[in-house]
Length: 95
Image (cartoon, rainbow, N blue to C red; front, side, top):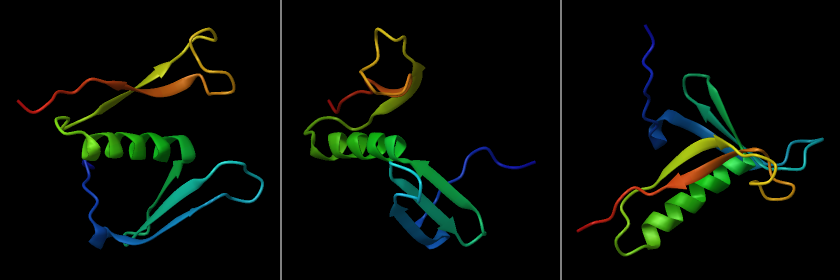
């Protein structure tokens, strides 16, 4: 049975490509692994990850962040944004 959890280290990665594929408007990040697998992250996913990372690294007390996938109604979503969004749920702070 295959593990459901995997930790990627720099040593697992052959290369990371970041760019806009032909015929597309948004960036994609492709992570090529030594195993031959490729992970492709869409721009919105990378943006959410970077936003959460910066929020944690620059905040004096924040030590974690949880992003939860949610389907937003037309009235709740921003104009020209996808209905499915990763939204932050408060994690906790250092005491």
